[in-house]
Image (cartoon, rainbow, N blue to C red; front, side, top):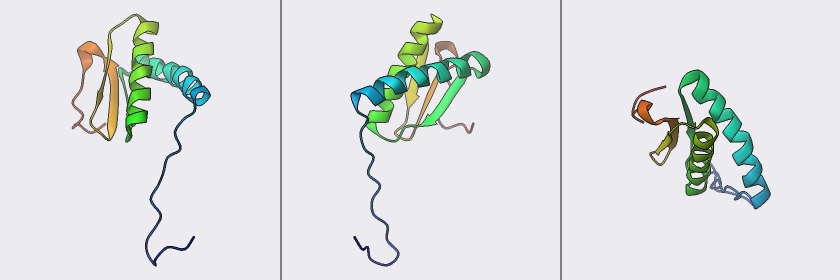
Length: 94
């Protein structure tokens, strides 16, 4: 397919299937738990509703695993996962 000079096709993300989603939740939960224990928060780009939902599910799993209240904040571009009492503003630079 050709595109007019200087233009690029729109990026289209393929949705995760059920197996990919389940594997992602497990792997990301380990990663996020490690970051929370060592650094106190985890921040990542989550620019689609599917990714926000995935990371919020990860945050819930991490809270259950660590047996501590964990919260997630999304602003349409980024999501921050942290312990409930340490909730940062999304406008600060990390």
